Image (cartoon, rainbow, N blue to C red; front, side):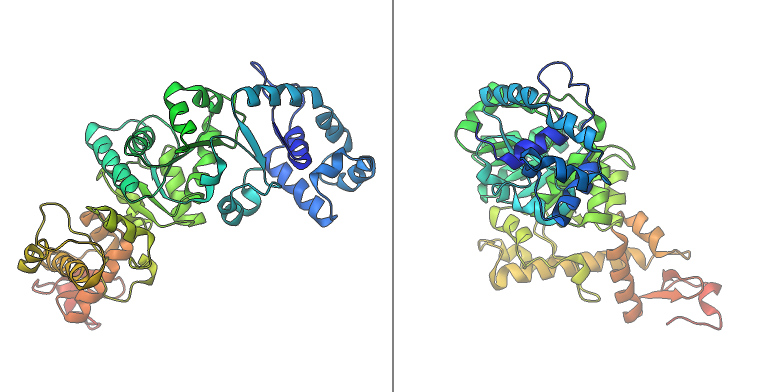
Length: 432
């Protein structure tokens, strides 16, 4: 196994180097400690490999405020343990990349910055790691309907030439990865544990050998399952993708929820779509800004998710509705029925008209529902009642109050159907 001096140094400092049931007795640098060490090395104009050179003793003095020199020496003295681990990895066709290596995924560096894993272990050709694609994530325990939905989307992505990025866990992850591979697609699996076992799996070997499967992990290939590791790797799945779909999530618990919440509220690496199961967890993710899954029916429709033709929710103009795709068997206007006689390739006047017609049909239905509100409601209450994002509801409410089909008061802000009598809306403040 060819390995750069920088990668060797980083492994000695921050990798457990598991070669049996347990690691050595020395406590390796935590991700936070290594981040501080790497930052200090940059300030000194040095790199990790310099800790293996003739001037290592002087360099350790300069690193003393971050990590004690005695601890660094003990970690760097694990050369024999590293050679054993390297031999084991090589026999299983597992490679290692560090942030100092040219082949390290650019997406992880650009998006995660200092929080990108110091080391990545992997199996399969690493050139796919910057290919992007659709991240599909979801709960481990799902029903057959959600699994069927997952396989359909993964197959559509394969048809569109888009890679699937997922976590390899039981349930949605494995269904998405398996369906994409069976359909001839490409898959990146970001594993939280047991990379070695996955690399030796007979079914995986076939796809690894033909170049359509890449398995990677920021954790030692021999490491077992750990809840903290599973939570930590979630952001890497999103960082390697162009867009993400959450098929199912529990409410305020579990790795899927935590990963999606992080993306929507903190990282915002990619647009996050929410679809499949209409559960409480998914409804809550929509209120955080998750986008309703537009149900593309062909590869051209799926491609729109990765293009500028689907505007980000944040940039939609006031009163403009979310672009929708035509679902199979659904039709809300005579024009839509006629448009199905022509191929919907996601571009051109026919496709544009279909999306506009669907948006207007949806708004018309929403208007009909909201005009029947017979008691004052907040925008959040309306969003929860409709099961859509708060941002989308606010756009609808603004449009309806502007056209006079909905009444609104200030202090407190409440909404009521325009045809409903209420003392609330006959106060001296009036409605805007």
